[in-house]
Length: 80
View 1 (cartoon, one colour):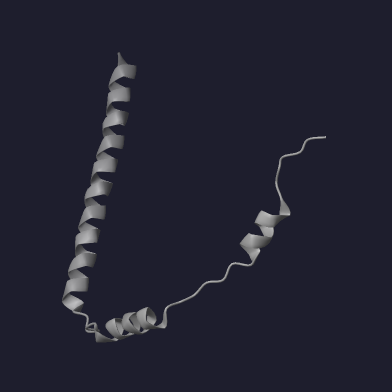
View 2 (cartoon, helix red, strand yellow):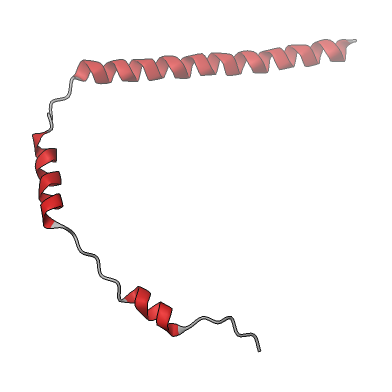
């Protein structure tokens, strides 16, 4: 028989842990969230979307050109 040396004392200590939340920190965090500016500029969001689309388009062009070059190189090698 193999004894690993685990005691039930460690298991019971882990299950009886309690968490204490400091109410002052919670109130400060809540107030700081309320003070943040909630206005959003739609133009900034649209600029981000446009920039992301440009990046995706550039990646697609690079990907297609790599595939086309591999096909052309393979065709050139196979024709000799």
